[in-house]
Length: 190
Length: 440
Image 1: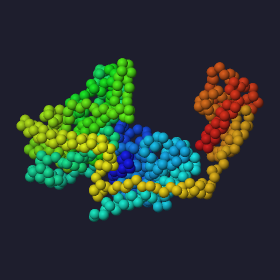
Image 2: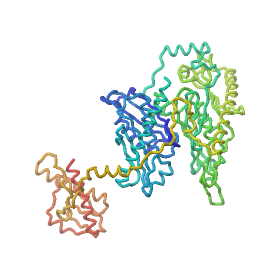
Image 3: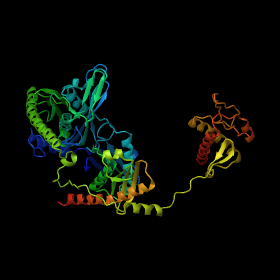
Image 4: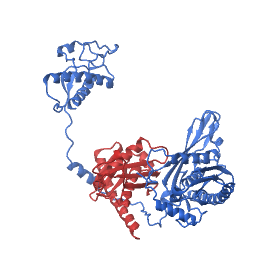
């Protein structure tokens, strides 16, 4: 499970595994992301987040190495204290890493909240998100920190978006270091 | 995903081991696995681990009108979900028999035992009552889902706090958690399910079967009991025939186990209460133990964002400016305008069909614009008066015989009283649509 402050997401991954007939892709793995909220049945918001996550993961996973298989990523929200989408992204990446699936690069998610005066807050809490003028989530991939996914809520200027993106790229450094340390620790006793 | 079937040699091995009173994980026949209860940051959220089986429970509440035949009682709603991450065989959106059976058992155990006092959930009789919703998610399936789920359910219900409400005559005030401390639910007793698996037509009995043992068992007996030794629910499934003293023996075992588990639950609830009162950190982030090799914690790290503005400005100046937007619209005739060039018509290029097509498109597009703008637009295919109060008669202008009239005839038509500026904007939208059809 991946916890950031009060936000916790548990990720489970099955794959590459057998796939039912219609979903089978002849040249690559069929990736599916399921996001389950804590309360209630999954609704439209969950579906749209699932698609965002799915496209981000598909861009990174080397699906061509496992044709005609299915990879299923299941994310369960344990608690939501803000920055949920980036927590899901990080959890998905760690799950892919732990399962040993071939990835082109690592990726991570960073959320920025823009205050009324233009102050950037990274990894905002739920209250900060509600009070912000705009909330931007970026998926950052690889050592070159390329933008894998960007989604915004609210309005901001082009300059502000570029500033948030640059800040997110800095934060990605810390997150990638965290990945490396946790993987090192996990396998250090074998 | 498909679940891997159980091989015959594995089945034989398990049955032989059970005959020799040996279990795969080294337990005795009547031993339970380790039960661990951890709480989340929200009230009413907990995770219960029974060995490797994990269940997440969350309780939430809402004010709703009551059921018509029970106007003074609150509503309880239970939902158990088998998450696809629990086992490879679980697929989303499939209502399996197992899911229905588990849901029914949970409902009987928690609702029919009347462990939660529903009368106390009433706010205004006949109008507003609390609806308590319990969501259970199975996170990992290693056998004995029902026990873990029942423990998680009752713990979450005990842990939950609902907002305080005061009724003064006709006025009802719901206080936020900041104004007044939330109030716990009134719980009479804690029913807990204990499962027994039977093998070889009832000869051998195991308490708390693991997933492998569940696959080879003949039948299952579930007894829900509280610490006062009252049986709340009992269910025997699988078609095994049990003798009376077997059932009595099972209920005695249940009483012992339930007492142990209830004590454990009380201790966990007290611990959590203490931590919350002292203002310590709580939530799943804290309860995942640090010492495990698979757990890793990083404190909140400051990120250096000093030169972010300069970096961002550089990027913007180096980037190409966005391409030019369309120029002004060109007004051909009153009623027809054009923005941009549009792309070549890629359809087969016959002159007549092109003209007819254009006529058809124009007629159709006008109709669509009319529909979406809800303004009266002119139908260029027929001469008609477009006074504001008259209803628009839409002729069937979608047929191919329709031809564009001469521009002079368009001038004859009376204008509507909507300003010409508005007409212009509606016309602006129209050619764009036209281009779309041409480009199709």
